[in-house]
Image 1 (cartoon, rainbow, N blue to C red):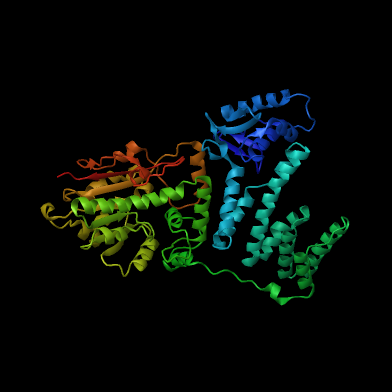
Image 2: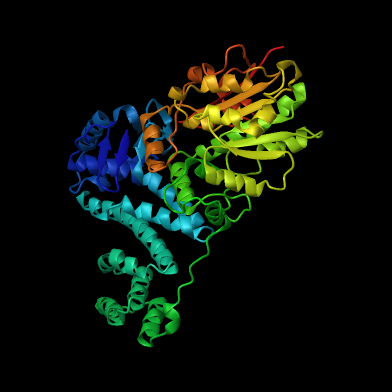
Length: 544
């Protein structure tokens, strides 16, 4: 179920049409979700919010609640002491709807996205500007004109409009920073006229008009504002007066644009030969969640990737934790293989961008006698980045390949040497084959089980296969959020159930003692939290 408050006040079930909501129901739904951020709202306050003519009894409210339950089911919960109502998770009155994956509320998701954008505003403005654009794109303040015209509702309505204007001011600041003054004038002049109290936004539009060579229009915007204030016995604020004086004086410094340089993360993508700012790439999105500082030497992502990752996190906060768990599980497998059979040969399929969790860094700790690691990545640009980053790392090689092209993979000299395919089986050493990403992008039509079988055919007893695959989202809302957040990505996820992942293990291999489990269950400090999206892992070994 999806509840929309910002572009139209609607309740959507699956792909069906919006549920019909009468005037009072729209106001009641808005009040319950916005007034206390999902917490209980007292009955008396609900009456003041949603009824323009105050009823003599509570009967109209109870009737409206009953009708709203017809739309939302048992999510509308009544509390006593104090007498109040709340929209909660289905069947779990203690859980507010904002934490319930079965109901997505655009107001909660948007405010979370705003917090994320604000955190990136100075640290990563290239990604922040994309997030602020997303925030405003899904928002239409005119929608709120359909709410009841009560005094209390007008205050609540203004709170949401103020949040919209806060976002517009942040975007305007970045547009000026990036020299996008023409676009700023096109998109925000009307907004300034509709909301005259916002002097910061007005000053930004005046500056943009000045940079567009329209000084007279900029000064006219100021004069109109001054007239409006004079009618209310007020004067423009000092910041806006300063902008006016600089425009009036023809200040050349006001033309200057200091575009922030691209951070090393974006530069690394460009240096690898990959297209920049085209569409998000899921592997780089996940990498930006693990190395979340775009100025880190390990960072490899574009602003588009980081903005898309932030959108995913706003919808599903557990995803960055899951991304780190996948990497930690790979390190655990390196340790266990080294501890149990002295393994020092590691093949990683679908290798992610460099990070502190890259497998050879675990091998440096657990294989003191030396190691051999081969990273396989399907993206040639990522291969180039891995080669560049690991050029001085002994025992590390990088090749292009994937489960979709097994013959090519098995012909790679580095792969053949690592797996010792040209030696008799009795002379081969153990090997760890780790796949935490390539399988996620490989449909069953490519028969990944046969590829793993070919890679491990004749491998020494004790050799290990370690797999991780995203699960099927537990709710339609979570699935819709993932699809929306990754729209346009060139990497298509192939989720699998735990039983489906187990069927991919080659015949003759033995599952580890934990079988197929959510990845966090393998870690020393599991932290499942509240999750709407699982990712399953397993280990399997060749018995003696």
